[in-house]
Length: 133
Image (cartoon, rainbow, N blue to C red; front, side):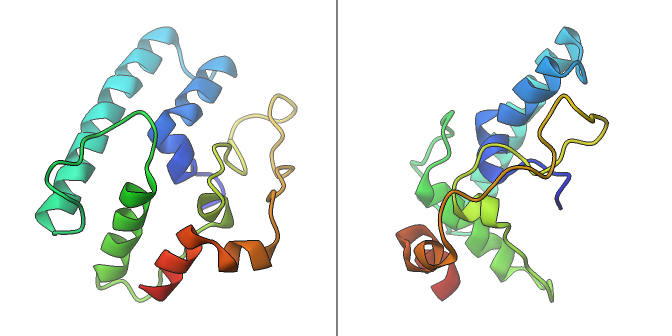
């Protein structure tokens, strides 16, 4: 949803850094969240590998790779969900999320603009791999 971090922001912990900067996390909670995030990413990589969507030698890195991004989307598409939505922010590699609940003037909620045209998104390798799968 609009209140969630982007996948790219999640992977790089951009959302945690923003919440710390905004005073929404204490330093202790921030450290705990970072530790939990590492575990979550490790578990996600294992899930993708177990489902043969990602190579066994793929390791968790601080930066989300296109390979992992596509594997995550393919996993979601393989679930029995009747509805799958992919935010444009994820297709364009955005770190910043659309909205952060609990802030007013401290963050540009609803002011982020997609930096490329829809045509560019539809013609890019990243979106092409997702749309065609």
